[in-house]
Length: 395
Image 1: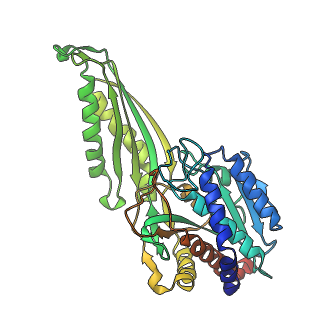
Image 2: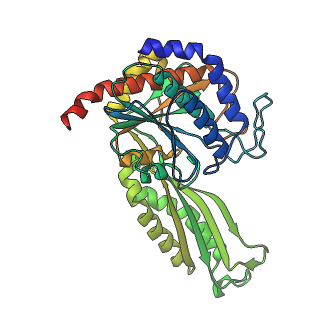
Image 3: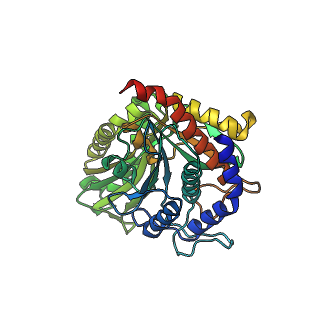
């Protein structure tokens, strides 16, 4: 069957590239991926595959196979609110929107996997292909997948993500935490305001903000195990308009990231307590808006072993590299609330200068698309074969 997948990818290479370029030229933001969803529906139904939309109206689920153990493969379909800065024929046709994180590649890969597996006889189970909306939003579309019961009855789930630091033709793997949890924090401090000549008569709000900015991350580093890799970084500070006036309000916005799932679960209470302590010690009234974003993606060892076997068959042992941990967030981590998960890194770098994620210049070496299809298809086949005894024992 693996050889049949290879043959399918080779025969459909140009079509896969054209699909990726179509998606890249027509990006849509999270929960607004209506044209993308309709396009995927047409492609899958032409292959004779049934589809069902997620309850929000965007995103799809497509089962290849009708019985046996269920393996889930997931791709994210949304784009970013960034301008496409590339001079290429397939550049975004929509101002302020761009597939700058590789979701067009992820979607093309999963579409290819569904079609390639549909052409095979006698699958050992069912491969559930989930085309998920709104990965870039907080909270994202993965929660919608869980709430819709899409993962019910499945044994395990896999996904991949483009990695521009890894050459095309290579695959990055890692057991355990591969991405971080990411939460969004906004702090508002208020006071009576006043003249900068008489700070002793009021609450020096800018000084209070500065204390929260500097002291809270330091306090966190002394109350959490350093091995959890917790990081609180402020991205925006806003206070005041005049040099000689102490403002009445000021705000901070930032993100908290952490690799350890247990630490993440207690992070909100800890951050709230420390912000209130520091802000109120300065005399300010404190309000904390804490939005839990995504948990870390913690790769299941068995899932990584299945990915590794598939990767070696796809790119050879020399093509498999150790993937470093990333402090970026990925809402695939929510899938672990229901079943074991594993995320692989798909090398997309084709030479030249760096093409980092979330930049308007981001692009990929399109040879990576075929690698991704072959990798995920093989992984699904390996997983189904491995899980048949498990499914039988549960009957």
